[in-house]
Length: 537
Image (cartoon, rainbow, N blue to C red; front, side, top):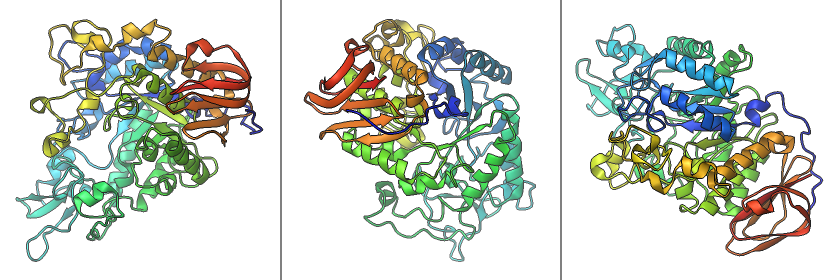
């Protein structure tokens, strides 16, 4: 198989992130340095050698700012300080320095849609209608008949309005009742967030992943949402309304454009990566603006939610490539702290299929995000009802909620799994660390971890894989072939039988079957079921 596709040929000036691989850490579950059962910043620092050996360019930290943890960090009570569970500002500064010394930059999580009800702004806001910070939040009177201001529902279930009895008004919460929504029509709120951005960027933080960035601003008139129909996403059908006025408002783009200007004040420019969990790729690409004036990257949930089938995934990638504005850059992920891990959801725990998923994720054109544990094929944990902590899982039981993908990282197979001190109960139950851990895979050339390292190394060594153009190539049913740049081809057999790929010319750079690596392909290359290879010059 040959290709005439022209690639970029040279590394992009922004290659560190465009060609880079990022690694999401859920701090509570990564490494506990002080034996309290909760992961922390010093624990992350202690694992930087693992990340350096893995070859990642950046780390995205789920929230480490102060929080009462009704939604585990996503209810922020202080945007400018570190929660004591995780350490101190000095610990964060040390993480930025020590990661930077290893060529790894740190992204933090920004939660601009809402605060905790324990944030000083909201404590003041609910002290009276004339309070200084009252208009930092979305308040509304009951309807004349005493009913709720409108029909909006919380993403966590139930009405999105909570009565403040002292003032007789309702406040909006699109998530948990302890997460009141901020009023982004208020210029003072916008100025506060300018200062928050600069507070962290001045400390050397490389950028932010922006939580629910499509929801920041709501319809100014607080109009009722229309009823859901069978054509709407299943979540909206379940809630009974179509999300029209409480999310995806066009004014959110103005906020992101302004932040992009602020980000450009820094050298290197700070990154804005959006949690863009929207219904269609057409909506996703809107968050790139012209291609260079909004987000640097928006997570493609259509990709993550696709079945693990060649045709389905290829369709998402090709449509994304076709619709992205010139200059924009894709962002790919297959796991995170809110949804089942790729090893469980896509691969059913099969190490061979996990390797195919890694190869796919790490060789597409775009910035790739791994979730901690993806590198070893970690599966979702088992969290019994009596140990559940996720408010969504507790509300909608027997739905398991988000706890299973948040269980602690296993570093070795002994007591505590290397996550915490032996004998200490971790904050969430830990799967049997002896079944799958970093230490056992670290020096095994056939392991999922070793393969993941080799793919990232190949990406780093190749302009084609890092920043080259993408072009689909013809291939048989159940397979996917695509060119990267001028001289690299990725071949994926995502079927249950062997497949011969014809007209393959070049050196096998990396393959799920490590025995193929280094061989020269001339003609037909046969790949076994659920396997893949990268062929280059």
